[in-house]
Amino acid sequence: MGQDSEQAWQRVKERLQAELGRDLYTSWFGRMALEAIADGILKVSVPTRFLKNWIETHYLDVFRRLCLEEFKEVKDVSVLVRDVARPRPKVPAAAAAVQDGGAAAALSPAAGSLGVHDENGSPLDPALTFDTFVSGESNALALAAARRVAEQPHGMPLRINPLYIHSPSGLGKTHLLNAIAWHILRNAPRRRILYISAERFMYRFLAALKNRDVLSFKDAFQSVDVLLIDDFQFLQGRTMQQEFCHTFSSLVDSRRQVVIAADVPPSQLDRLDERMRSRLNGGLVVDIDKPDHALRLAILRRKLDLARQKDASLAIGDDVLEFIASRVTGGGRELEGALNRVIATQQLMGASQVTLDMAAHALKDLTRRNDSQPVRIDDILRIVGRHYNVPKADLLSPRRARSIVFPRQIGMYLAKKLTSRSLPEIGRRFGGRDHSTVLHAVRKIEREIAKDENLRREIDLLTRLIEQR
Image (tube, rainbow, N blue to C red):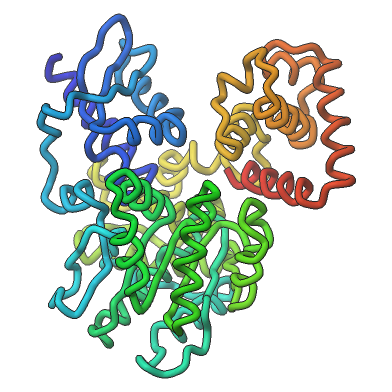
């Protein structure tokens, strides 16, 4: 492979990290290596079968899309398990710590300084503190609760336990969990803190099972004073959930702090044990709403101030910030991405000032995606497939196993409910099926929803995920 291929591979990795975030990228793709391109197939490798299966189950669609966009001659991708004797790709030291066991911010008194990591958790972002969190009406309660937890005197009875924060992605949950951790580390360094994502928790548990070292896994998690777990909705599998329930109960019963962040409230975690849902609801459950215009504008101003500390030549007026706040209605992550595009436009064009026309051109593909954008059947297939762990190919296939048929019928029902497509067109998009098959699926799901409250909540959750795609 030539230099062009290496450059394309570097672009894939950079875009993948931008889309997934540093933690998820380093956890699952940090040890992936480019192998070859043959007959239009891009071949990559990872060191374990577990990584291969996890990537294929959870991230193959986004990975394939990026590869096809960057490698013009590639038609598909193949993930292989490489020979264990082969050296893994060189990575920066910070990433290597993540790969070797799981980027961690479980910090003990022996750590001695902020930012020291062990192998149990996920990395803390030094930029995510209470000082950098922009507050407004939509997140005021969550911020107040997070501060109360962070400022809790060590050794005193806990006032809030557990604290459960939920919101759609990108509205500040991860920021608050990081802020709690940094505040405690700076003001009560003797307390042991563990910040970890649900995916990292699962990875560590499966690794412990494989190495027959579950006792050490339990000790590592049950010896902390403060447990902060992010993306809790991704915790999957009965055994995995039971293990977390044991850890959770042990910590709460021994008066140690637990903070959980998720995309949905406990009542919508339908696959979670009812007793566990009850215990989560027994603490303080707070949500974060989408920011209003005033908060979006305040977030943009804060982000621009931080950017100007690095580049004083940035010239972006209030009219441009108002435009961004009006057109991009998501959370801080989307707003920061939009602002970065505008900043890049000024820098690349060498302009002395960003005009509204320049900002509109830079954001033309972002601002199309708003509340009025029609739902696509591809979005439904992707989200339903991910929720039920069924590949898109199976949803479109003639296979009749119930584990495939039921998600397929739910997908057809959602397509009829959320799009303007006709029954024949929906049938064609679901593997070339007849319109009568679609009608049967829609009527069946309607009947099931009427008598099954759990299914109704599941459909509501899927609807919400699709609309917030």
